[in-house]
Length: 253
Image (cartoon, rainbow, N blue to C red):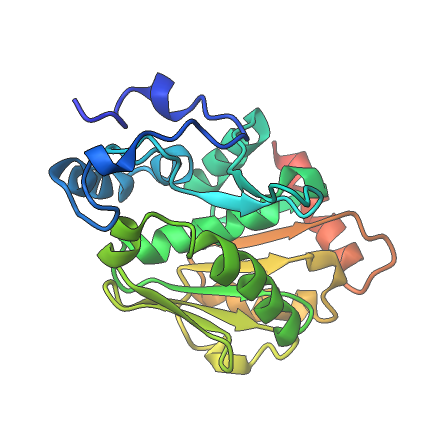
């Protein structure tokens, strides 16, 4: 049985760097072994395995994040808390999600990883990541995906489906699956957001978006899933609209 299969070995990762095995005794870092190929197939049906799984050859976690407060060891293993499990369940089962967040929960990281999982392991996915401006959206993807998530993936996983960040356009393209994540800002018409079919449309810091209601109205008819996350921002342009959505969700539970 592959080492990634038992749940007690996948889902009990700490936020500390694990003890590394002697890599000289195992396969090369970019070698797609039988067990690694099997893991890729399993990940297509299991996002949790991508987020919290381990390399079956080395035991190293697949995903890394950044802790800006830790100046000595800023690169960390993706945390695995009950709030993250609940959020993943919502991502897997709901087509409209609105979540108030706190910085320590790192939901912005998780929505980027949700888009990344869709595009890296599934064909012809078209996803969007939006903030108040396109430049802000580009800055987030560059800082988190291009500088941390992608370069810290195991080499064999990066080679499986090569992905590239194009800063001038604000687009991540996945050549092996013909999928992409694009950035969208305040212009709701940008990149055909009234005409393209989105598999997933994410709005980060939704309460601060100057045209949140119009943006969602434009994306909703053509989006399989819309995700809005924000820290509490009373008095901001999109706050009232976001709070109304949260209130509606609570009333329907």
